[in-house]
Image (cartoon, rainbow, N blue to C red; front, side):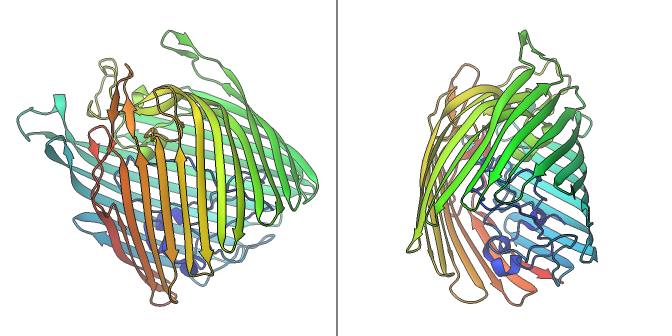
Length: 553
């Protein structure tokens, strides 16, 4: 069962002791220095749902000694690591949880491991997430809603020679929204309701193995995504890799070969040769990404490049226990998929998406000092360039040639932009025993049609966030958080801007463990009831949250 499918639980953030015994925690780590994860930065969740942690604990790629794993600080305590041909076990086979908050925010989740031995796991899970709320567009209020159900199963088998994983997942989403503009009668509040049904299916299989001094992997993933009869897309992602060496203090090297192909005919073949060197205080990964596009290289009247070369370098140095430096220079091609952008925003037109985006360079440098008397400081910055990067836009071209209009034209289209710019930030943290854990960061980036930090899809100018977690007594965890994103806006084709409003989100969470199996929890967000737009004519939900109970058995 994938851990992210218990993610709506407030306890996932607030109950490390519970998560330490979570039945689906599994990870294998070969690294000695693990830099902080640099996430894909989805600042303003364009899907109007509750912002709760979604964590996938996938087995790490064998060569990724420096790359950020899927782990985040949501899981501060892990089970004992497994070794060789064994899987760490927990005393629980299943879980069930439900949470609700008026007017309508609902989450329900359940899973069970039918086989749960030291080397074999077979499990299934389900999750439902739903919400409905009213939001303002100008002086009028309209109804918005979203319901998503997911089902899945996975199989894990550890052998002396390696690790086999197979997983299946199905998703159905139903989104409702007002049809403004040409889809409505234009008389007062008389608007039609657009209902968007989406289905997705994913299957993947992976093998990680070792033979003498060689480690190798072979994976394949198939993904289908579609909007009822309007649009369908399939994605095929094979990957093989081999590495020689890798013992601490010894160099290693290898190559990965990955394909990423769509049913539309667009695709990308990537070669990643690399060299690694790791010691107790220093780690280096030096490689290249060689991308070859396999689809049509003509977009409109413009021909685009078929071959791209980008760096893949990460260096970490920690000469002292209270000082560390991390440097990264990365880049490469990206295939833009409908399923990927559906996860960001249910309101978009996949027929018009640019198939390829490219990052020539994404460089960053970070210094970390501490902890000293519980205080840690970090200073970081970087520079990045992204070409044909899909960003939300205010306007979009006519869909006359598409054949079927599946979305409201007042909702944003993801439009390709060439974006470059620097990013500066600073942070401070404080920890007192296991009782108080505080962290705050502030960041800024330039803002123009062609300038900014490409990972910030809302083009924010200033970003600040802070959180404090308190464990005052046994079995009780509290968390207070705040996020501010200033200067959020969109640009249309002519360069005109549309302001989205600042995001000012105060959140509160609490979890109480009645017993090792039973927990009650709550999670509230946007407690200031701040009004801003996720996208054009898509207002954010006001006060929202979940109050619920979870049980492991």
